[in-house]
Length: 297
Image (cartoon, rainbow, N blue to C red; front, side):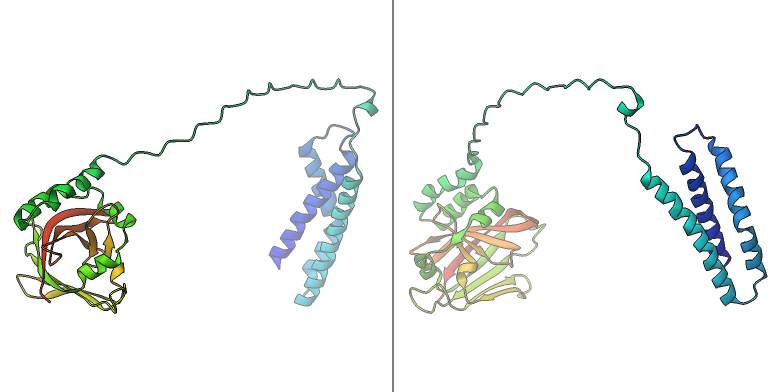
């Protein structure tokens, strides 16, 4: 209750001071310090008897009623002051007998029209990204698997993540080439990072010669322990077997987006050779091994 009364007193002081200043504003220069002191004295004198009566009240209900009465007086003062301020209109320069010359109009020079920028020419594909495609011509003429694997090391895709992003669905002819059961190995270049090579198997069975759907299974096995550590199942091989634009090869997701192989058909498509790319970090892949697969069924 003491906090309520204190709040009423503060509001009352502000309202009464505003009331006094509203009457005097524009008539004379005001000493703000003296004005505030005078407002406080006037307000205290106005409500002194009310506060004294409030102090003598015993019950909480009576005190609330008296506090409400005091607040009503303060609000009355505040509204009176507000009405005066709203009715006040500032005196114009013409009514004071003086006229102010119009401000000069400053005109900014119009900027000359800008020439329309020429459209930017598309950036050419880096030569390093085309080198591996040109090497495919040499790969076609290889009859020996070892020579082909040697040439495949010159066909490393520098930005493999972009190759994944731009990959296209394989054709029906590609689907027929990967149909069946294949088995082989992924041999790593650096065995300090990959201590064991992997065994890889895929099995694809299309529903019809013209269908791109059918059960599929790709498994990866640790060659040293014989433990299968990855199984990729599906009914749409086209999601994991993709076509490289402008290339004879395929990209195959063999390790749940953590590993891909870039492979090419040999020996009437009964053998597939290629490079393995492992994920280094998000959006970055590195060629870390090579793969050889043979049809077993």
